[in-house]
Image 1: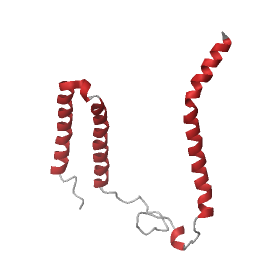
Image 2: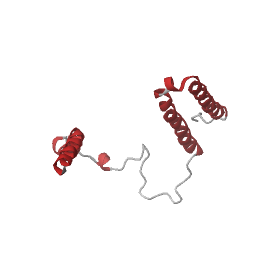
Image 3: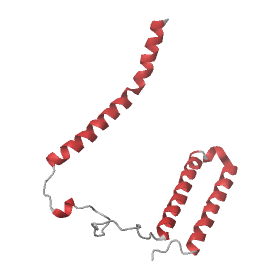
Length: 132
């Protein structure tokens, strides 16, 4: 009885062997790329490559006290991205089960898209999408 149980467990674990091999190959590739990159790649260093990159702004040697003001448009853009990204996340399950949900699901998804469309129209009308 104990022997039969151990053979069942080993056969069940064999299903995961390709997954373990894939993770091992991914780890070897990632570590190998990180270690071999500096050895194989060109080594033409200059002063500009060694400086910190701050999105095209000249780096300042001293930090700005108080951090400066960040425009509200930055936060509005981030919130709009989250809003429409979450909308897409909710649309995927509907796309998978559209045939099962039938007419009820179709009406519900149209109501959902209309609600998000109203939010989009409101933001557009208020000037939230202007990049000036």
